[in-house]
Length: 125
Image (tube, rainbow, N blue to C red; front, top):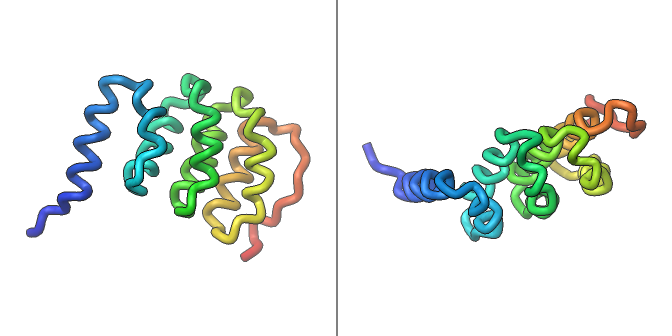
């Protein structure tokens, strides 16, 4: 069985970052897509307590990698009402070429403001 050194390196890096949560924000610009993905996921897992990361999550929602954009959109939704400043960014993601990103953005918008009215076709391709 071959070891996936890249995955192990990313995992080690995340464990080091967990000791200093503020360093997650510093590493959100890292060149490694798996690390950026996991940072977005970690911030989403924190939920409303990650409000200080809103601007970094918006930036990650514009990443070139669709799994990172989708995860950042999900994480923004996990901020709840604290994510209202991200609504314009999430609205723009409703037209993203990747279905997973569009769906995550729509779910995030509903989580941030259930009263917000926007058009989205869950069945669209």
